[in-house]
Length: 389
Image 1 (cartoon, rainbow, N blue to C red):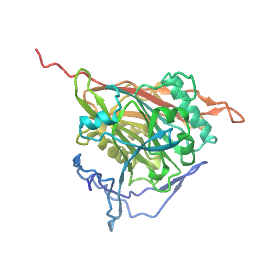
Image 2: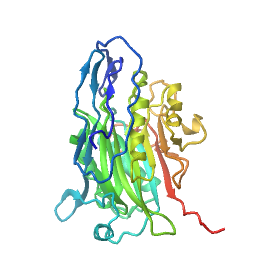
Image 3: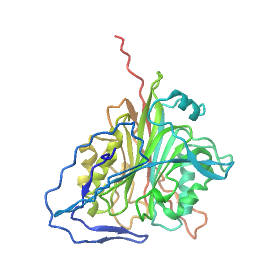
C-alpha cells in the first residue's frame, strides 16, 4: 500500500492561512505556471496489507517545484468505558469476513441494512464554540434523530454516522465529555493529534455503537494550505433478505476554501472518492463542506463519476450557507452529499438541519449554532434481485 495515493505538485496559487477573524491569502513565490500534471493511475491495494501508518515518503524536487505527499494514517476508534472513566480503543471487525471474530466483537448486534448520515460544519471561528457544539449535538439528538430525552444520556439513536467539520481543537475534550456521545457512540479520531500538522480545527466522525466498523483512516491532503483532510470510516452492513454482508465507506471531508482553492478542490474530492472504489468496499458516500463557491465546482462530482444526492440543482431550498452570519455574501450550496452510483443501495435526497437554530444559554445574546446548515440522509441497501423468471 506504499502507493495508496499519488503525489501532487504544488500549484501556483497562494498559501492560505485561516484564523478566528478572517481568511488571509499569503502569496508565495512560484515557478511560472505550466500545464497541469495528469493524475497518476490508481491501483486499489489489497485488503491483506495492515500497515498502521501509510504515507508517501518521497520529497522529490525538480525544476518545477516540490512534490507534496498525501499522508494516510490508519485510525483507531474509541469508546467510552464508564468502568474506567476513560475513552479506550475499541476493536474493529476488519475487512475480512470472520464469523467468529464478528460474533465476539458485535456483541449480538442485530443486522443493519441502512445507516443515517448527518454532516455539519460547526464553524470554528465564531465565539462560544463549546456551547454551540453542545447545542448542535442536542439538535441532532432530539430534532433530527428524534431521541427521547429522559436523562442526560438520552435514548439509543438509530444506526447513524455524524460527520462534523471545523471542530476546534480546544473543544475536542468538551465533545468527549458529552453524556450522549459517551453512552451511544464510538469516536474517531479522539485527539487533534491525528489531524494535519498544526491544524487548529478539523473533522471528527461519531458512529453509533449499533454499527460494526471494519476500519478507519484519515488522509491528509498534500495539496492543501489550509490543513484539510478526508476522514473515512468503513462500516459493515447486512444485505436485506440474505446472509451477505458488505463494507460501505462513509467519508467525512472538508475541501479547500475560497476562490484560491479552486485548483485544489477537484483533486481533494478525487482523492476522497478513491475510498469508495477500494477493493472490498461496496461504494459509499462522501459528505461534508465542499466549499462549492464557483461555477466549476458544480461539475466536479459528475466528472469524477459521483452522484449528487441532492437532485434539484442550486435552488434556494438546497443552499446551506449564507443565511446565518454571512456578512453580506450570497447564499450557496457549499455542503453536499455525493455517493458512488450503481452499487445496489439507495441514498435519500438530503434534508437541511440546523435551520434557524441558536444557542440561548451561557451567552449574552442568542447566536447561530453555525454559519452552515447541516444535511442528513439515509443510505439503504437494496434487496438482491431474484434470478427466477
